[in-house]
Amino acid sequence: MLQVLNISFGYSQKTTLHHIDFSIKKGEHACIIGESGCGKSTLLKAIYGLLDLDEGEILWQNEKVLGPAFNLVPGHQKMKYLAQEFDLMPFTSVKENIEKFLSRQHQNKNNKRTKELLEVIDMKAFADKKVKLLSGGQKQRVALAQVLAKEPELLLLDEPFNFIDNFRKNKLRRNLFTYLKKQKISCIFATHDSTDMLAFSDKTLVMKNGKIVAENTPEKLYDFPPSYYVASLFNEVNALEAQLFGIEKGTVLIYPSEIKVAKKGLKASVKKTYFNGNNYFIEAILEKNEEKILFTHQEFISAKPSVYLDISKELIKKRRV
Ligand SMILES: Nc1ncnc2c1ncn2[C@@H]1O[C@H](COP(=O)(O)OP(=O)(O)OP(=O)(O)O)[C@@H](O)[C@H]1O
Image (tube, rainbow, N blue to C red):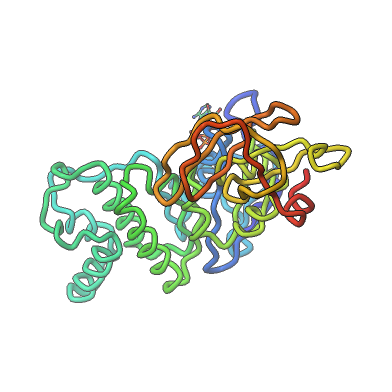
């Protein structure tokens, strides 16, 4: 349904997107993740038709998406794009801000749709409140309802939860992605936050310096990260010398939660222990190569000469890069 075919784009001389190639099926949710400045927003803008590409093409239902040089009205009709900055009508109510974006239809149907969207963004209680009186996170939720109002076939969201606190974010993400699946709306969203990607994307595109460096389901990327960069997007990760495990070359990527304190294993001295809620996060130094190692443990460990750390053989085998 959406095909991004080997596209490249630069704002000036410098190329920002390099030979990007992927596709999205109807109802599929894809996440674009990567460090700041890697080109996530630029890719979303290109898909929406806001940029004239230097190379390649984008097809929506097998028809070419035209850039501004060939299209007077910016943005593809069947898509909706929510940028990082959003523009609401401050002096009207939340309800009116949403209704303005509904297609002209029967008043009863409009009322039902507005109610449904207020539920998705969890703002029923704020329906009559003026937008200028809302917090940044509440405004972001109204902006989300606006892009949903027009029933797009493809939704493009740029950091859609960045103003929303963690408490509300969890519920909002569940509501939003359940609604999108129910309506079979495809979605591509850009984020820095791995928790957005883990639970809510069918596939993840990892970007670095304008290129897609990995593409897979979040589970596969977490379990078999192809590089330190990919693993580090999920969590802090140890890049351990393969030689520590008797392997001649390479690095082994191990998440702190995968290391167990045991009776034997890699000898390390604990430097610092941080309380982490349901466990402790511990920094230690490996005796063998004097490198830092991070692990989690159920109990507090005081700084002391040595603990033994065990990492399973299967993990070592599958995490070698
Ligand atoms: N309008 C523009 N003109 C010139 N350069 C731009 C423009 N917009 C973005 N860039 C540059 O293109 C590169 C990619 O920017 P982009 O906003 O796509 O990255 P991003 O991954 O979305 O970053 P962030 O996560 O910080 O939003 C950056 O080097 C940025 O400075």
